[in-house]
Image (cartoon, one colour):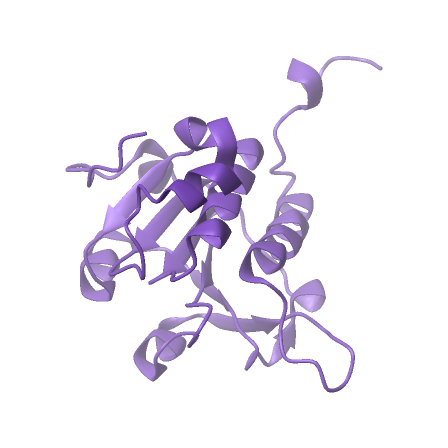
Length: 176
């Protein structure tokens, strides 16, 4: 798996397909699981560095399995560099969100942003988001694993925007 920084933005950044963004992830297994999710859902992933681990970490590969080679990944050296490259609506998923993700209207061009597992995102990143979404939870509980949160919110966003890939290689015109 090659994690080279891309000199030119990937096709989905240029065309505006929904994306996931990971702000300075610090647990390789979660990043691997999210990359696997993204590959299966046919969405790109932006990794905003620095990461809390080496991106070729074996634990990440174990969680992502052989799906990592199918994931479209763009690495960004910093938040600033990411913002210079990406001019999209950012939707932050955070425990400090003010809107339940189930009540939000997603757009096919959104980027769903997830913070560090250990610290979330700093105030400037929080403020840059067009919306801050939360996942409703039982009282007294703090948060879900970031990979589970990404799967839940991405699933709803793709459902709303009809963005799921066709099943079993079938076109939308195929009859059951």
